[in-house]
Image 1 (cartoon, helix red, strand yellow):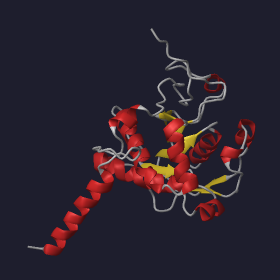
Image 2 (tube, one colour; image 1 turned 90 degrees about the horizontal axis):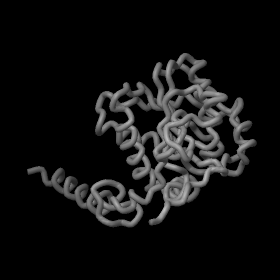
Image 3 (tube, one colour; image 1 turned 120 degrees about the vertical axis):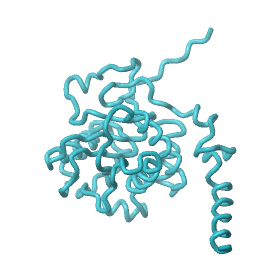
Image 4 (cartoon, helix red, strand yellow; image 1 turned 90 degrees about the vertical axis):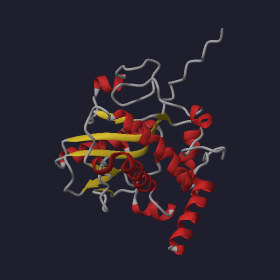
Length: 256
């Protein structure tokens, strides 16, 4: 009997039992990363624009922006709104080194992706919107790279060889160190991404572009157009959360 292998297996089982089989929010026992109670309390993006997934009061419509200026992408997956627990988890990763929250967030996104791609072909490659090198040095890591890496692991378990490939070297580079997006107004965000990114070919024909949060959509749109100009035929957008516009306020539930 290989006692060394046995002990390693047992240690792994104990580790997974202590840290993996529990809810990352309330620490209750859970088969996956979140218990059913905490999962039900997440701000899901149920009613949204059919194209860009901007939160709206009516489901399956086109928002005014997509009607007047359609985005360069056709597919967008954004299962949550950027508020409540989702906002707290993402901010914890970006500003407080709470990297343990990457796993539950990417698990939630992978669930939605698997459901969304039941009747359509998966992208060949997964790319992410990167931070500027100086921002990565300041933060200590690139959160979108870490999330994309974990997301690939989650999808690989279900898709096997169909899982989009995450290249070792991301073809998208941020060459201009713009001001942090969360500190800018909507008008400033719309201007910010221009000439901030560079694409280094070659890339696959069908790309999934990942970002943690989509606010105005200007960064996503800019990177999508650069990818299309570089020879990509289709870009699908994958984000964890979509930021509601200031004028959007969820309608209060009626009580009987």
